[in-house]
Length: 279
Image 1 (spheres, one colour):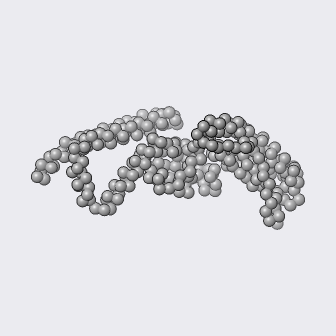
Image 2 (image 1 turned 90 degrees about the vertical axis):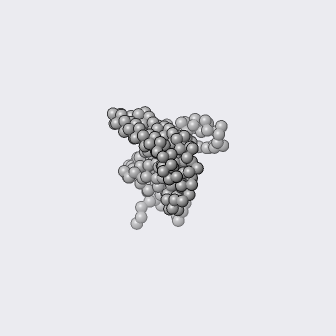
Image 3 (image 1 turned 135 degrees about the horizontal axis):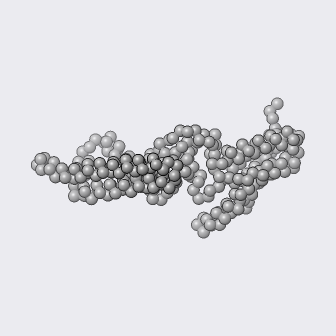
């Protein structure tokens, strides 16, 4: 009986092995071809899409090949140790979550996302996992640390995921500028307005954001009263704080903040604004 069962599995096992070798050869060929197009986004997308198609075709092939043996396979799996079953469960869950990511695209390559507190730019999406290029944890708009974080695909259902790039291209960034006690409030606000409105990358965004929001209003009930930079005033512990709020692309927020602070320090030297400093 055992010999008969073994004989039944010879053919599907052989085809499975042949299919695996063919898939391996195809992936190696794709990798070799992609080396000739470094930096080309179209070829990068083609390479990743081709890998996904190859994997899906191979899975479908295995399902068809092993269809008549599924009952025997289920019986066999039922006697496998609990630890191994849990490991297989995680792999299967990651595969289905990977298919979900590729189909419904909660995020895509180059999106800036946060997963369970880890912030970064998506650089690769596979069936079992995805990888992000980490950014500094100082704030959501920090610079790359150069560290690539490997995250299992199942995190999309077990962890909170925030996508800073999906939907709207631009987000609201805020800066707090604490003024000296003897600072001229009106002059200080006028100076900060002049600084933020002099930055080209900030000037161009309000019209783009307004047009984008109009496109989204058919699906989302979202409205903004202001699109241009605005300054709010707050008093706390006797200190006057200007809260500068403006639209910016997430990946350019740190760059713009640096420009604003450099210009504020220049204006302080010219006597147009006075920043609070600890005694």
